[in-house]
Length: 136
Ligand SMILES: Cc1cc2nc3c(=O)[nH]c(=O)nc-3n(C[C@H](O)[C@H](O)[C@H](O)COP(=O)(O)O)c2cc1C
Image 1 (cartoon, protein in one colour):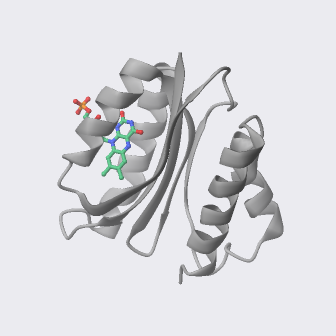
Image 2: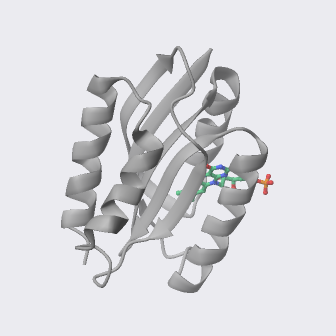
């Protein structure tokens, strides 16, 4: 059984800007190796994360992520079983003032969410819009 989790969180002082890119790169590599799909965005001290994979793996990974001291205020928005694989890989990015109004970028962020069931996709899409809108 596949499982999807979506949450937002706040980076702590332990994670300064310089460390974000190397963390995102490491996560992207690890998730692609472990069949974890979805998207992780960082913007101005906040994270937006959608991840989908084998249920047991995802639940264990999320409990590890929740105890990671590099972020706090973890608010889970979606946690549900899925019949099929929804995504086409795992992507990470840093959203900045320069790229946040770029409609092509937004389409790229939506691509990994395409295969989700319509209801979950709508929630993820709305959250993504709010996340990008409020980033500066
Ligand atoms: C916001 C945030 C998101 C993370 N997401 C993932 C993830 O999707 N996959 C992953 O393997 N580790 C992720 N991590 C890192 C894990 O919390 C943990 O450090 C890592 O799995 C430990 O890997 P290691 O034992 O190989 O060092 C994330 C960390 C943070 C702060």
